[in-house]
Amino acid sequence: MIETLLPNVKWEKMWDATVQTLYMTGVSVLATFILGILLGLLLFLTSKGNIWENKVINSIVSSFVNIFRSIPFIILIILLIPFTKWLVGTMLGANAALPALIIGAAPFYARMVEIALREIDKGVIEAAKAMGAKTSTIIFKVLLPESMPALVSGITVTAIALVGYTAMAGVVGAGGLGNLAYLEGFQRNHNDVTILATILILIIVFVIQFIGDFVTSKIDKR
Image (tube, one colour):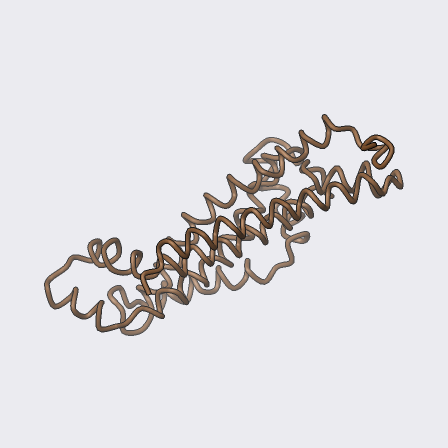
C-alpha cells in the first residue's frame, strides 16, 4: 500500500536525510543556546544602568547582533562560504551547514535573551546587589533562573526557525530533508518525495514545540 502511494521514495535515503536534519538542528540549537545567552547577557549587562554599563561594548555587540540577524539566511550561507571552507574544509554535508546555522540563529536568540532579562523585576536584582552578591552570583542565581521560562520559550521558537534554515541549507548541498526534497523531489518531479519530506519536517517541528511547551510549563513558577 505504502509503495503504491509513495513509489519514488527510497526509505534509506529518507532516513539518512532525517538523521542529518536532526543532527544539524540539535548541534546548532545547543550552540545557539550557549552563544545566544552569552551575547544576550552581554547586551543586557553593558546597557545603561546595569552592572557592566559600557556604551562602546554595548554598541559593538548590538551592531553585530543586528547585522547578522538581518541578513537573509540563504545569503548568509553564500557570504560564509570562505569561512566555512576554512573551518570545515568543504561546503557540502551537514557539518558544512553548522557555521551558517549558528551564526544566523545566535544573534536572533540573543535579542530574545536580552528581552527576557529586561522583563525581570529590577527590585530582585537590586536586592541581590544590596546583599553584596557578586556579579557571577547575580547572573547564575538571579538573572538566568528568573528568566528561564522565557529563555526556553525563546530557544523553542529559534529551534523551529533552525529546522527551516536546515531545509534552505539543503538546497545548497548541506544534506538533510531539504536537500532530499529539492534533488529527489523537485528536480526529478517526484512529488511524493517532496510531500513526505515536508511531513517529516512538520513532525520534527511539532515535537520541538511540544517539548518546549512542556519544559516551559514545568519551570514556570507563576
